[in-house]
Length: 290
Image 1 (cartoon, rainbow, N blue to C red):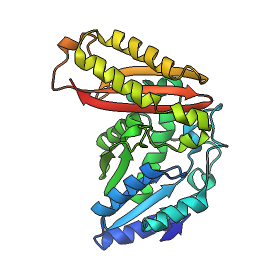
Image 2 (image 1 turned 90 degrees about the horizontal axis):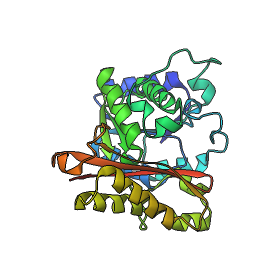
Image 3 (image 1 turned 45 degrees about the vertical axis):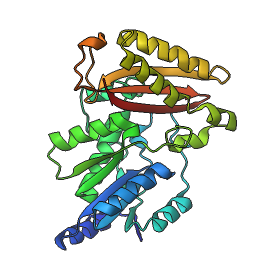
Image 4 (image 1 turned 180 degrees about the vertical axis):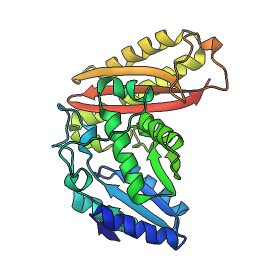
């Protein structure tokens, strides 16, 4: 495994590999690798000749009051995981390498998709995500790039970028990997105290609860959401928490009819939740058909 820190060297390396006819699979990460990342890497290994993993904590996607400085950076552990998984290259640039000027003058935005769900509460976040992903695609030039469905809004935004900007890269969605309790694997789980960790699977429980209510078609969408938020609050009642959002869209992030009986059985729905447990913000989602 080779660790590359310079953009120019990474570009020369992948250009040579492409000329040799090698297929390149790419997994973009901010480090603090966990089982979910390993799942992405393993899928990339199965489907490509070469796997590149990027480790870069992107400052553009953090707001002024968010956790950029305290975001975990266990690089020694991360590199060991990549070696163990037989990753070919780790692209590990500094912020100065990725953004050599004090002010970035070019940004990528995806109108509509970036303003709902997490984007509503994290202004500029998805502009930062979109910009760094475009930079990484131009540096790595992957044939396939792998993204988890836990960050479903991010996945849809990246798919839209590839479509609209004609990138020659296939975006491969990978199902959310969960702990035995149902808690979605996330780097931010490490922020949770032991008591918070024990109840963090409540997000997943509330999603399943809401899905069950919708499938029963007893109420409309708004009431299903209301009941699900009440259920989630009960599950988290002994822990300091705040439900930021609990929302339902179709698989393309379009608003769905409030009357469940009028939703086509061919429509796949997605339920999304974001909750602060203590000071840690967790997100989760599930998809299903009526």
